[in-house]
Length: 166
Image (tube, rainbow, N blue to C red; front, side, top):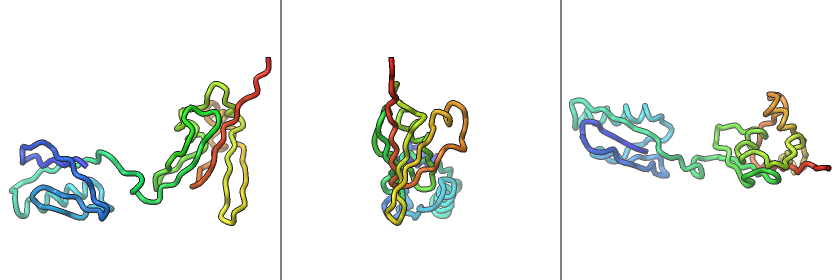
């Protein structure tokens, strides 16, 4: 996070929220920030500074980077086949990702991709698996959003190669 106290006339400082959800603030030391918005934390810091150190404090706070690995409950899906960037994709906690979104996130299909027959393999909690064919081309080019499927943790997407005949 970047923290600036305007009245300090110093450059903004970069701070990291600890694993326990605390932020080290100049003069005040550590405060608990987990589960709060930037506005709430800035208001909390302002109140603390004005109580003991300033007549008026102006605090600016911004998130520079989020450590998705520690953000909690991130899901992973895997995409392979005829996409430009195959591999694992994270779905941050609270976000939604669909089959077409995963294909786009993987750089889209290669020139040989068959986006009409993208396969989604999913295992249910009882261990049985199922495969669903998704027409990503219809979703992207024709706007048929009802054909898109929301992904779940552990889903596997395969984009096959089209058959080319001369």
